[in-house]
Image (cartoon, rainbow, N blue to C red; front, side, top):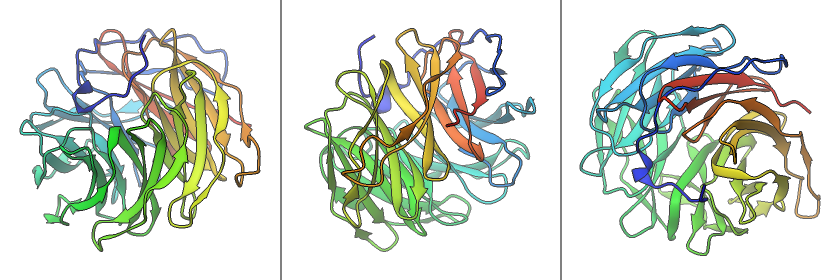
Length: 362
């Protein structure tokens, strides 16, 4: 399979179900079959109510949005919640208050839409129209208990940020952040009201930026280097710092930790493997992230790592790859539902959604 960065139009015919493997290792729950017929990557967030549940949004065959809440450790799941709309992008979601998540998607007119919902209670707001003309999937992170900040790419290839709340109708203006972005951003909460995002630039190297659309404050783009063939995936790891994973031009996974406000960055940590598609990462404690990736046979693998503490700190710490099996036809989407564990969702070969929880511990 050719390595590529997916755009907003990655939404395609993904097919449906993953054969559940037999597990001999209790570091994984095995796959939980969630059903549906899905034509997008999932957008997932860990619910903020202490349940260990994850809520994901996906696009169905009629291009409308659906939400589902599940827990591979307990086996519990809701029905799919119909959220409507006509969606042209992969969703991006962030947990807000209680059992709610807020997601952003690109609508049929290429503008951004936001919605807040809870599949367990079957509650949802109307779609909030956020405007703009967007050419890549959004990436969102929670910035207050009820507000979410998302980054998108505009028609000129520059990065834009917006903060909003579908419950109250609040939204900031779009914050123009500049740059020329290839593919989609990945964002994580870096402090109250601020998010840090990573993007791939026109030279295929990585850049980071920190910003707050409500105040208009932003850092400059921080040049992080590398020669990359995937979109990044980022998670907050320590105060002000974000750790991201990307695929290098040799097909191996790379990790880096940085802070655009202080210009701190580690070297890229070489994590190896031969990866297709984009990684998905979640912060799993003690400055560490756990990521899921697809290997060349389209089965999923997990890895946990912590880049070194500075540019001279060497390769940092990492586990071996943990084989999770299955055959996936989408990029994974992962969230940290409990300490040390990541819960991920993927689409199987028959188009249905599957969830799995695992611990790639040191």
